[in-house]
Image 1 (tube, rainbow, N blue to C red):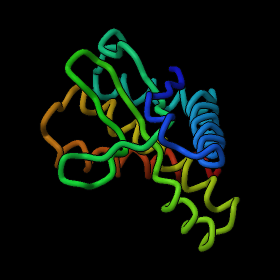
Image 2: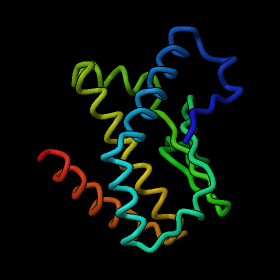
Image 3: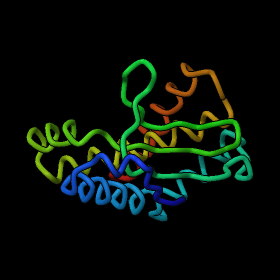
Length: 149
């Protein structure tokens, strides 16, 4: 797992660059925690997804937008490369105004964890978005309940 900055950095103001760097580091450190890593290993075992199918996990520094105009949370390709993207700065500012900084951090971490679970499931279920969403909800709910204890 690694943090990857894109060339988009050239078009972003310094304040936002620092924000996105902090965002990426928060995501990276939360996804690397042993408890979450153990949970991911459990999912891979239950779903019979070989670790060798995972070639690379990249935490991107800047947001990405789908062709439909909606914001992209994550993406997985047939090579086993997984990409996780941040929310736009303006969306995070609105969340921070509503939830406070700690609430925003919790939101970012939960979004990243659910996003990674979702993309890992795509390694097995590829284009079955309904099944992947259903299982993402199931597994993230299990993790949330487990981590609160």
